[in-house]
Amino acid sequence: MGGILVIAEHFGEAIREITREMIGAAISLRADIGGPVVVAILSDGAEALAGQLNISGVDEIRVCETGSPHFDLAVYEDVTCSLGAELRPRLILFGHTANGMACAATTAARLGSGFASDVFGLRWENDGLIVTRGAYGNKLNVELAFPKKAVAVLSIRSATFAPATAAGSAHIVDCKFDLSNVGGRTKHLEYVQPVANGPDISKAEFILSVGRGIQEEKNIPRFMQLANKIGATFGCSRPVVDAGWLPKSHQIGQSGKVAANCKLYIAFGISGAVQHLHGMKHVETIVAINTDASAPIFGVATYGATVDIFEFADALESQFN
Ligand SMILES: Cc1cc2nc3c(=O)[nH]c(=O)nc-3n(C[C@H](O)[C@H](O)[C@H](O)COP(=O)(O)OP(=O)(O)OC[C@H]3O[C@@H](n4cnc5c(N)ncnc54)[C@H](O)[C@@H]3O)c2cc1C
Image 1 (cartoon, rainbow, N blue to C red):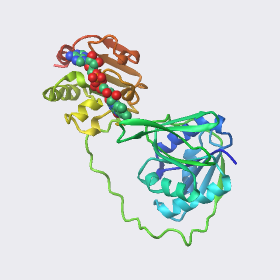
Image 2: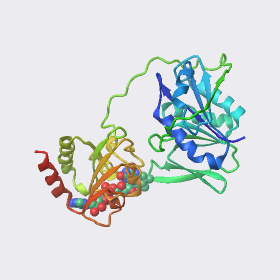
Image 3: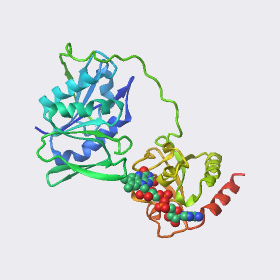
Image 4: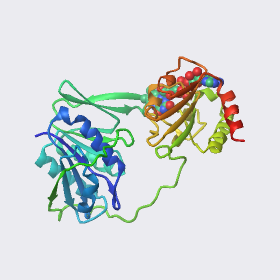
């Protein structure tokens, strides 16, 4: 018994990024947990998807033909429980996605395992797993352990763990399951693309972000226009959202979005609280503008200016007129 089982997510002919992120998270724990990292793909075209998961650190890919390309809660639950019984992993990872949210908790209930959803931190301590997730509407972080549980099922927050990408040489194993009495309680009708609602922070490469330093709601349009002018996506810290000045889709940080693909981040009047840094500290080039030289944002900034944000904005604007 041991190891980590990752339940892959895919859409059409592509593996979704959350799968590589779960594999990254699994690899980071494998030395402590011991045993193999096994990735299971459930689909009618599972074989074709397997090549995309041949990633360094993955020991085995289980190709589980389910007869349908679509997600079916009962099928996912049943196959995961069968794999759990056979492989006896210590940890089973789902994405904290529409699919993962549907079946992670029910799978955990069937297995009698430990469970935590929307996990954004993982560590191994005193021979046990500790996970971090939000609580009370993400106002608090809580750490959970799973004493006396042989298995833990987790759903993993997207854009949080570094994706594993290096090519590997995993062993590919075909699996057959008798699913004749499973599924059929739900029927896939169609995929409906969500209506674009605000910026896609996780895809943006250049972000101009504002914090409480902008002082008043009436200053929002000015910085939004500046962002448009210089070709940046407009982001913000949480107090700006809490005040109702911008919708939640703009928020960067632990209870907002991670700027996963950002290369340049300009922070106007943001102090750099740890929860904000969670969403942007990895960015290659960070420019911080803050009058307080001791603000923690300068600890992660590539370039900093201890000047008034309105003065800085004037100077920047004038360069683009
Ligand atoms: C569980 C939990 C989850 C959270 N999740 C998030 C999250 O996802 N994202 C997030 O951002 N926060 C989050 N927070 C809140 C976080 O702790 C901070 O309160 C928040 O990030 C602070 O935002 P801020 O930097 O805009 O404001 P402040 O900390 O108030 O900083 C404002 C900064 O502006 C500077 N400033 C003021 N006026 C000017 C000026 N004229 N010119 C230049 N600089 C100026 C000040 O020196 C100050 O450093 C979370 C908190 C908790 C407890």
